[in-house]
Length: 141
Image (cartoon, rainbow, N blue to C red; front, side, top):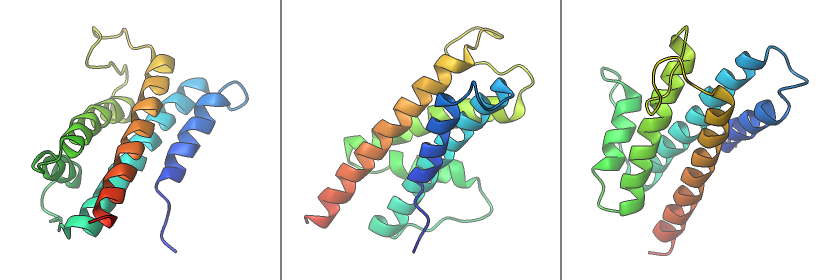
């Protein structure tokens, strides 16, 4: 049985919802954004492998490859997923590597991490919904 990537998103939701009982708070939020991103990154990669037989080389960033391969597809949902996945990737890099993370749409230092987690979880859920619709369309053809 293969791993269910959506379980990472469930973990992100649990971290977000139970932040008061699991300290430290900022670590929960940063980890939630990380897990939300990896949930959709890996599900998108799996989708490309299963339905397009895509291969990924190990010399280049697999993250960029997934985004680019989705963007190069003709379906609007695949292109939309590519764009939103890239936004999530940016957020994930901020919370994983930056001492004072910021979000692209905000000035430096103004990140409201709690709101960003909520936004990124919603975005990840929407990506999963689109992936499910795309998988359904592939199985109906």
